[in-house]
Length: 450
Image (cartoon, rainbow, N blue to C red):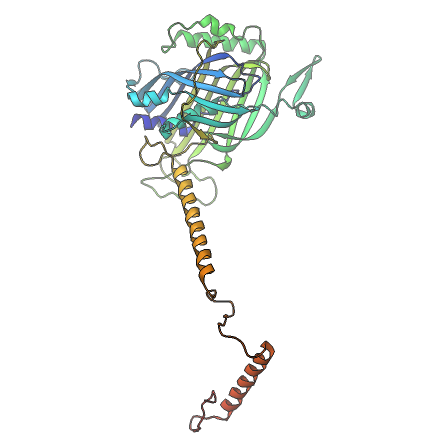
């Protein structure tokens, strides 16, 4: 299932740094990006054969005054790969001669192209709204993109933090060079995220723009009517910053990871054994302007998973699963036609990946199904408690348990002290009679005095 492969692709990685702050997204403007995400699997030590999938699309982003953004995918394209001697460019994208274009079913394409809305505050995404009934794996694709345009720079902009340890004084000017940690939710999970920001010197800016010119000259997916001069002029006269973003995948409060090994017995002694897959993710984003007001010029991520093919035995031949995601700004213009949000919205408070329930086209996730089951169980328990309370109200006496003293339903003619004394007297008499008895003795009374 090709579309299911796309959903698996986005689980592997695709977290690109961006910015979704009110002061970096101008209302009544439309930002257009080219977005490409892929996953390729192979064993590089054996040969250059890789298999995988790639999704490419244009993305329209329209910010609003109420700290929301309406987004829409347009012209999605899907390519599958299983080629030998594959050659890649610097962004790890296969050359045009590789791969086979796949047709996206009309119904799925309609879901892909349906608009969705993002609620954000101070660079952090609060909620995502999609169309009700949208397949869960399509929602995961949109969650992945929103993770890519989420960039929490609030700590970098705190003056106290910058003054203490995140500024360098050079010739009377202050250059922010912060490195800080935040807890951030993305498609990969709720994990500790490390940011590092540095200002690019002029020679690296020129080198970056030259690389972009070369990329555009060989970009076989360039849209018609796209102006290269307009793309380059967006950052003319602005400062350039490099933002490195990495997720500490060993420090997560929630991670949607499922790992199962076939053909070998995987065990660990508590250390990082070779049988355990290792994963790393690094994002490099180039922004132009200032930290408060900037454009995302380009953003790319490489997420890599290395799996040993021989279990606990160390081997040079390892399965390499490389997921790359690239986001390039194409234009910023006044919004001509306003995008409408979902007509019947369904909210998602988290960007973390969720597994579809049942088939890949299901509009319900396993997590949602589990939550509904828990709610049903709680409702059933509440109903049972209410029924028990109603039954107790009808009873003339409570039911006995195994620890409490039994409740008598007949009236007491003696006080509690008198009853205790009588019990002691009876037990003393039983002990006294039992001491007088032997196996051959006969009595009219037994040990209980009866």
